[in-house]
Image 1: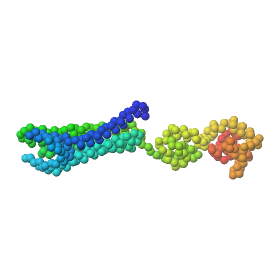
Image 2 (image 1 turned 90 degrees about the horizontal axis):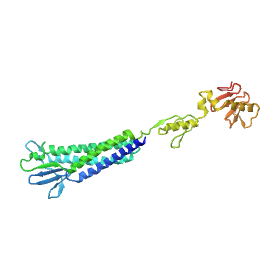
Image 3 (image 1 turned 120 degrees about the vertical axis):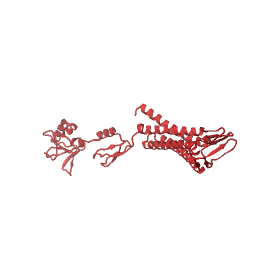
Image 4 (image 1 turned 45 degrees about the vertical axis):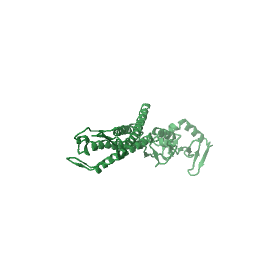
Length: 326
């Protein structure tokens, strides 16, 4: 990831965290204040309604209770109105809680894609809860409770006003904050977080030692190599660890590159003069073995055998060949 992309990712992360925690604080403020809906009835009676309590001017606040409302066209039950209001209360609490979860997950998902998805999911739930509260509350007060009319439409005489107060405005700002937080969380997950870590079965050739980024030696044909092991780094290590066995099985020319003809000529001259210093008889094969040359020598045929490439060398033709001695 380039420097500019890294800066954009950090901004998106910090933005999602800021707006989610801001939404949580705004939800708390909205629930603790009591000016969601304000009514000034004839006679200058002022009543400020909160989500779960109402305050009458000149009197103390009480738990919100709703009488049955009856007009010429319908009757609304006060108990149903109370249920609707408490539903709004629950939606605001839920939205604030999920906004807080979003904040915590955003902080923890700086490099973890799975937590990034979870934070975006929580942000979407918070957004949905507060959006539902933003619709349900005004619909209930300005339409449903007063028989599909506003409160003042039922007042036939006198001065009347009914409007939503600053507490409801705070809830609307909280809902908008969750929208921004959700968008930023989705942007972070889709464009900036690293892909998920997966494990894939990677066969390792016998005799080749591969070391992953954690320093673990993988030398089992059934070993599981973490996908986060850098392929180019692993390929370099494999190349460094490869023996002639893998390369020379494909072509005898590969061995000729590893063991130059001149070197083999000198080695042949030495053994033909029966100077076998450094060569030890292997009783299992009847051949002589050299730790320095890593070769077997057949004193009868005068040929050499490379156990790594499983190839024989004929000093007469100066060729490597595969199979039994020629």
